[in-house]
Image (cartoon, rainbow, N blue to C red; front, side, top):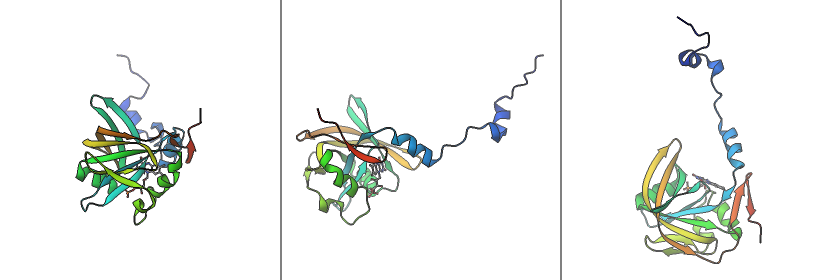
Length: 182
Ligand SMILES: Cc1cc2nc3c(=O)[nH]c(=O)nc-3n(C[C@H](O)[C@H](O)[C@H](O)COP(=O)(O)O)c2cc1C
């Protein structure tokens, strides 16, 4: 019989020295800061009929049939709770002039909507940031998938409102930026 001198999976698991080091939150944030994205404000309406919203960059296209996207929202988020309860949310894609809205919707405050222009749009009666967004996608919640400290919310896009198309707002390397002109 031939004996291997190389440790098998069981020995490797028992030896902490050979385990890959865990990636801490700082390293992960640093990694993702090198992956710039657009900036959205996810909006909805809560059980009391009050508008809710938060800045969100973890937004991703999912598929075409049906047109669908996903956002990842922190489990403690009031916006997440309200969106799940209403079964719908809107994704407001910010343009360059929406930088203030991005800051406002990521900072705790009494009423994030008092500083922005907004209106309700159908089919779900959701807030659209009429001055800060160059496009708004109205979504029905298809499914939620818990994943650690966040929840993935999949939405079917049921309606799209577009405005003039100024340059999109970007976020990466921990700061906002503007899509180059031309
Ligand atoms: C540029 C930027 C992007 C953000 N993206 C997300 C995100 O994708 N998901 C998330 O849960 N929080 C994100 N946040 C943090 C939330 O906007 C922030 O925690 C907000 O206060 C949550 O609001 P709520 O708890 O009232 O719903 C982001 C913040 C900034 C500044």
